[in-house]
Length: 452
Image (tube, rainbow, N blue to C red; front, side, top):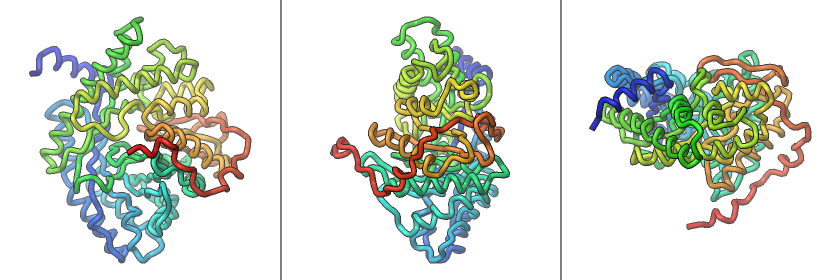
C-alpha cells in the first residue's frame, strides 16, 4: 500500500535528485523479414517497426503525464541485422541501416539498436556483409546503433573479429571526422552481450526473446548520491544496506513503468535493467557517488573497491524489486557521459589503465573513451582484447566504446552535447601491439567455461 511518505519521497527523488526512467525500449523480432531481395527486406523492416512501435512514444508520454515520472528516451531494439543478411543476394547491405533510420524517424524514437553481429566463434557471409557496412552506416545515419559480440565465456575470444573491430572503429572515426568522429559513439564491441539490454549503443533483440517485448532501463545516480551523503560516516556494511534500500525504490518505479507500458502496447514484459546510468548534468554522476564514499577523487586508490560495493549493492537491492531483472544492471562508468568522470579524466586522476581495472567489478566496460586520432587500429584492437578478456574470464558482460577522435591529441576534447557529453582525449601506451593482434585465430575459452 502506498503511503504519504513514499509518495513525497518519490517526488523529491524526481524533482531534486535526477531520478528518471532512462529508457523504455521496445524489442522487435525481424526474423520474419528475411528474404533474398534487399529492397523487399528493407521495406519489411520499415513496415514492421512502424506498425509495432507506432504508439511507443505516445504511450511513454502518457505514462509520464499520469505518474509524473520522466521517461528520457523511447527506443527500439531489433533482431541482430546480420542474421537477415545471409539470405540477401546483394553484397552491400547498408540499405537496411537506412530502413532502420527512416523507421526511427517515422515513429519518433531516439535510437534504434540492432545493426549488430554475433561473431564470437566465427563469421557467416551475412556477418561479413554487415561488418563491412558498419562504418558507412554509422556515418550516414543519426539514430542507428551497432554492436558486435566478439567473445563469450564458453566460446573464448574471436581475435579475427577483434582485429576487424579495431579497423572498423578507425574507419568510423575517419568517416565522421567533420563531426568529431561521432560515428564511433554508436558502435560498441561486446563480450557476453545480453539479449535484453535496453541501453544504447549495445541494445539488440536476441533470438531467444519474444516477438515483441518491453525492456526498461532505470537511472538514479543522483538518488544514490543523496542517500550516501545522508548516511554519513557509517561502516561499509551500513553503507551497502543504504544503497540496497535506495536501489529497491528506484527499481520499483521501473517495474511500474514496464508493466504499464506492456499493458498499453500489447507487448511482453522483458526486463528491468537496474543500471545506474549517469548524465553530464551536475548531481547525476556515478563518480560523485564514489567520491561521497570518501575518495578524494575518482581514480585514486580505493576506487575499484568503492565501485565493487556500489555495483553489488545496486544489484542486491534491485532484484528484490522486480521478478524480471536483466540487461546489464549495475553501475555505468561512461567517461563522456558522467560529469565527475570527465573532471577526473581532465586532471589525469582517471587513466585508461585505472578504468580497465574498474571494469572488472562494474557493469559495462571502457565506455565513451576518447583517444588520439592517430592511434593505430592494432592498438584499438588490443584495448578491445584486454577489456573483452576481463569479461570472458570473469563470466560477465564487458564492452568497449572507444573514439579515436580524428585530428585530436592529448590535451584536446571532443564535445557532442546531450547525453553523450564531452570527453578529454586520454593517452594510450606507445608500445606496439601490431604483431600480437596479427596472430589471428581464437583465444580459447577459460577452463571454467566447461560448467554444465
